[in-house]
Image 1 (cartoon, rainbow, N blue to C red):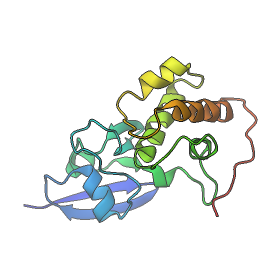
Image 2: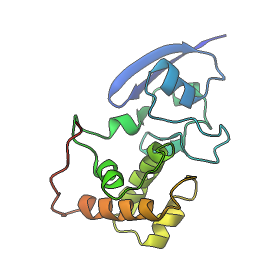
Image 3: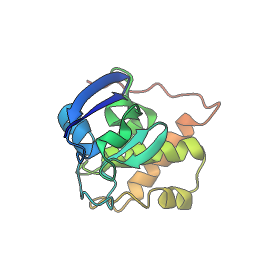
Image 4: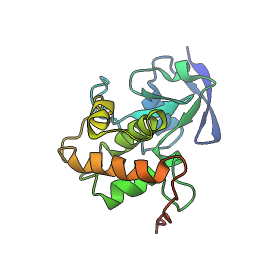
Length: 167
């Protein structure tokens, strides 16, 4: 028996019939066509599927699409404003906070929530805040540097640097 799901993802409304057991990550990728949210482990260990649901980060492989019915979802695609990268996206680029890029969308979404809760985290607080997100390539050093750089730009009252544009 299929169920109707209606969600808003990155400001766009989506409505589809889905199998009740369809995971939210598959709904986002296959029904909504937003492939920036990655499928890593399907067990909630890696965090590659992290999205924001009603203002809170969730691992989209741990919930069913029907559980998100009526929700506001933000994915990695929803952070940039046109060709202007979000400060976290720009900082990951500038500080080489990515290598293969597989974990990057989930890492950025987790970092966004971290900086919203704590605009000036210490290195230790950043590392603790990313505990649920795994990177198999970088060793986290440049990821931490990227989040520190973004924190400076995103801090309340900070003079925003002119963000780069996506070509």
